[in-house]
Image 1 (tube, rainbow, N blue to C red):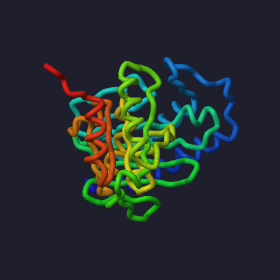
Image 2 (spheres, rainbow, N blue to C red; image 1 turned 90 degrees about the horizontal axis):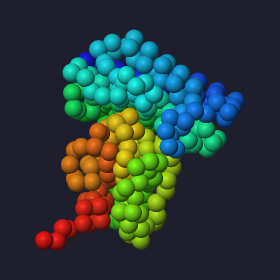
Image 3 (tube, rainbow, N blue to C red; image 1 turned 120 degrees about the horizontal axis):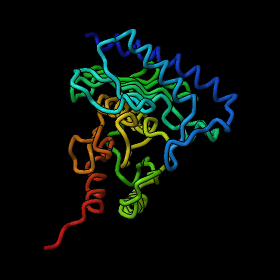
Length: 269
């Protein structure tokens, strides 16, 4: 398989899907919002965009199975080697409220390894993409995660859980500690955009918990190919399905130390 050529085809699919999303954003009727669960919103735009993407991916790469947000049949890995991991509209709440930060995220896994990722930010028309061993790019220009930054000079991104608040007190302590050490934190509302911005050096780091595979798969590969580091909160590799992710350039070790000290406090005997 030629991953570079496949990546270019996925970029084209994202651009086509983006045109549909942008058109719907201009005329969206908020009475058509649906509620999947607590603070978990969806619309026909999410579902129709996902159908468009799945149909097109099936045409260019029929070997791939799917893990996709809006289809209950596409929620887990199968025994097949290749899996597309798709969020057709990452930042749905932003979209539904008219906030211009939302994206399309498409990743490809070969067994348990990410090999391709595309994140397209709809409103700025920026496409971030990478394939295994090929580097990371934005609109055709090579990009790199931030190197040589001190924590005190860094701007970080995060997100807040919209359900399952059991760990929220510890998370607030992490946020507080990192705010004191940096230029501050931003909450964009699209994890895929956050990750893409780490890859291009706009953010020096990103962390969040309670995310799903379709939120992070594409962005994680783009960061790794941009020279950044991606782990879970333990410093391991369970960040696609483990619902924790820490992604950064050179400040990753210090961010990890801060998060671990508050997320996994030392047990006393």
